[in-house]
Length: 276
Length: 319
Image (cartoon, rainbow over all chains, first blue to last red):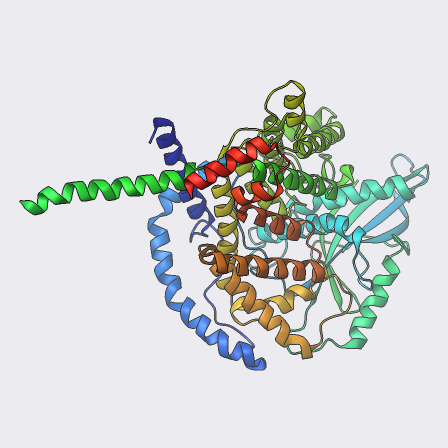
């Protein structure tokens, strides 16, 4: 074998090794799921047969694998540096842990006008816009939805990033502090600016933007959704489908992080705001 | 004494055999046509992925739906502070469009493929929020294509070579970028399968039930009735076993065909029930890497008969 091929062989062997090792989630480095047994298997005859066998395989495997991986941690750090430099860090856990809730995000806008120096600005009107999901839930998603999926993805990842950091911010009593992670700020900034350009008249100004996230648990396997609840939720969502909904003039003085609001079966929580 | 005499040459010969196998496995020369096809397909998919990230002001501009500048090397902060946030976003977008267009048509191919890889790699640092697994797959596959000369026909480069009276085709190419590509696809599935295996929701067969019910992803507005839960349970287990066993199934011609056919069926199924952007297309396109480059060249090449004849001779010699 020529010297060139020998060098290339060494690179290929290292690269393949790095890809394999870099792909494995490591205890203490990557977020790992706790070893837990399957649920709700008795409802489904196929799952009742297969799930116990799979559980039996994973239970003894997990601690052994963890001890091997623990020993390999120093090499993994070198691999991470290599793959990070090439931007090839890989995580292939697509839908490994699919969310069990439907997600929604709405943005509330508070508009003021007739600004007088020295006088606190007065809210003249408000509006609320549903920004996640980007598509109508009562129609089949076709071509436009292909493009909309990027916006949905961006908002869902921003929410994931926010929730991932939130634990470090919450106090011992589980209360939200006055300062929160800034992962939802891009949503408030972007939609706030877009709303200003599209809907504000001369002399009007956006005083405050709020980002609310809403969740509705999806039914577990074997349980049908209540049609009345689904219809009530769709009725609420349909009001948002034509664009921002103008609301009553209201004060935001008492609204803090964690404020809750309900619409049909959607529970909304205020997770970001900015006053201008 | 006798044993010692015989042992050395045996070890030597088995070592040589392994080295020879290694060399053939990674460094065998193959016709360039499959690389050309991969260049075109991933060029088009790159363009599709870029245009999916529009409007430009939403995903490419620094003040769009993008993380607040302030981390990393500070490039985004610098551009934002100097009022170039929007212009830089447009420049990045147009640069990527030009790069993938050049890659697709095979113009300045080597530079284009490397540029596309670099542009795609830095997109994560620029704005990771709208990027899905399709982006990760595309990036990993582009990395493999960087190492091959993908300017084979049909391409502008080949046309230029022909006009200049040179041989229009590129030379035979080493197979190792293609092997790396195949390995990468196997790794994606195996790792994805093992990640899923770690979660109870996959072992209890309910994962697909939850996935197809998610409002962000589901394509149809009505929920699946409980009477169809058996179908989602089967889909969950089939996906899990297929992903984990995918690399093993690639080792045999018959199981490889079965695994790839099942893969196409599963990805078409995913595409028809879930809106996942270009993910299904990118994964199905990656299966092209599993075609035999010699047979592909003989059946589908647009190149000159003389080159094809030479290719057949090489194939026969190696066969």
